[in-house]
Length: 398
Image (cartoon, rainbow, N blue to C red; front, side, top):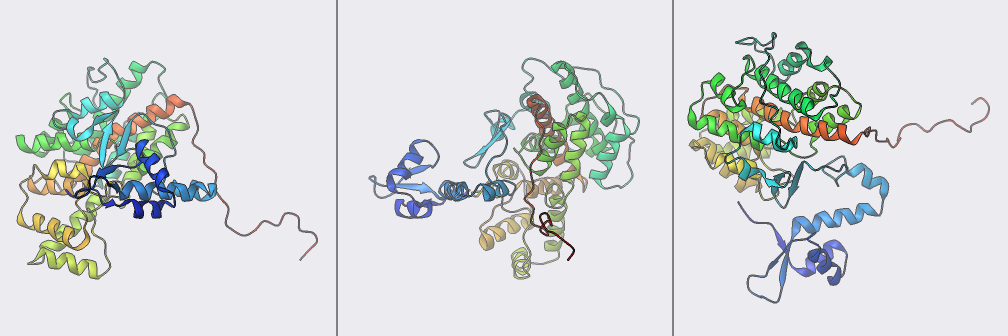
């Protein structure tokens, strides 16, 4: 993985529109990373990612309206949260590095951490059956199946919020188990989620471990579209399951969880060419993007993808596709590509990448719903009207 792009002081201050003293103040406060110059120890170089973020914040700060609008598109933070942090190309769950956590943790471990359960274990309860879950489910879209399945089980009409934290966590654990059950078309299991999914897919030990890692790495990703939708629903006081179903609905979009289907289509397209690099170049010449590559929050590469791809024995086509994308676009694979690669290498079902994304992220949705409910606030932003001017103040007939 390449390191961050670095700027000298002259370029950094030019982009920021500040004097050198202000740049040094940003560095001292930890807002901009600085590294020693490789040939001149008296000078420093500054991370372009941090400089550009600070510059954008300064520009928006001069216009409150623009700042508010920009927050909705990879902009400045808009909600306080103690759950997940993405900073300097790394992902943290309540202060713990998610990549390191995924080395050994189960999805249930990640849930206990993200739900802030302390010593309580919400998974230490009998597993209730779900009558709607049937083996060999019909070939419905995964997202539609999961949304319908949770609703059919009556979970969305259950108690709105239990006052006792222990009961809330137990309900959350039940919800996670049912989401996994519907995703794989099996009854809820007392097994750890990764093992239950691997058994349903006939995966071996190596694949089971990678499924576990993928679930943990996908458990949360700060305030993405589906998580924001979940928090909005939770802020109304709706049932926990209703908030999770809302997250699933947002995840189903092709620009979010549905991106794995676009990655699969890309790899199928490339498989029809003798040279993957030529297929990638042709796609770029058509003006098409490469789904599964690049991420706005990880300019130097998605660490979640690296954590999975480094443990996969990729076939030549996958390796060549990654190399061609890096050569032609400078972008590295993201988590969507890694999930599809995992499924292809270990011959998992076609909807396995989306299922891993959905089941893992259910943990994060629940964490954010619980946190939002604890704040007691209703999320209700305002719109800036840009339509036909109102007729107030006009007199007489036109």
